[in-house]
Length: 444
View 1 (cartoon, rainbow, N blue to C red):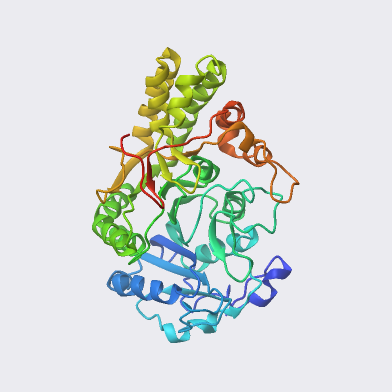
View 2 (cartoon, rainbow, N blue to C red):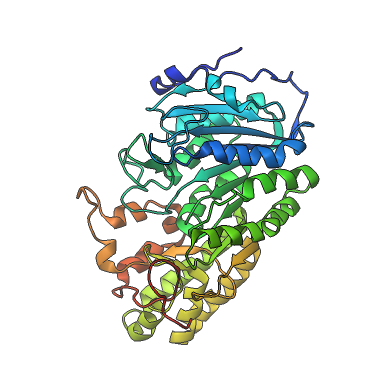
């Protein structure tokens, strides 16, 4: 089998991981409609995830209209490590098809505990493999595993030892994750460069800070601003099935969400807590209009404060928070409350523009409401909301501030949102929230 020329020393032990599949097509033949690339890490439980996906999709895979490349890294040995098909730290890569023999997939992998899921070179190589071995008209990158959205400590390009970088914590490397700079860099360097979609099958990735960073890399985005249940991993197998039956991607994507609603609901129930939730399909290019309205909002807030401090602070402490452990708030809800509390014409104008932009950007959304905690009629996407003191605070190592990290985001550069965070002196308190410990305040 042909082996890829790997570009960094980190790849030396991974030759078999990137070697070509036995069914490598000849040029111009066997072009699939879609190739779905599952890039994942959920400790030692990926075995069960892949088995479930295979069981649901195997009847749709033989004609190769839709092909699936599975790449994942096992976590550390422990209570939840299955060890069925691989050792702790092992990376496996294989096509999920009708002939997949799970007992042999480790032969394509390697014991690569030092393999960095977040390294842009590794992300690039995985996408290149998909294009080389499983060529298709369009490609979808499905990130499967834990996540926590924007974190000023580690969503910082100069960091290389952070513990919460965004997506897919690596138990073998101090729980380091992929931040959005690394993800977008890896995609842009690859031979695919622009994906049909990125599916964040992860918690809290429906944030403007995360999505605007990767929006140029994909036509569509799937994401939730909530904590996301992964019971039955409903989205990935459903997407494969819908893509097989429907030629139009947007129609298939919308159907994927609608068909997954009942299973998402069941997953939240199995979590044993009264979690609300949602999952949305987002048109990437429409986020530009959302950012434009946000810039108008942020600019006007900085002008009005502190003259309208009381009204603005009231809105800040009533905006919907997605999880009470994180400073992520519903952007559209915040804009509405700011306009209502201040009565300012320009804030109302920005709010109206944002409403129209979100209507175009969020194409489809399923909402899981368990009837216990507050909920909005519809959700937009989350935005970081902190006060001046937090914004100016030092990192745990003291080598940069929250501001230094946030100001680098594409979202801030497009909107100036960090300027408002630096101006705001009100810490959000008492906000209704959709998820978290304790009883949420009643009312909206």
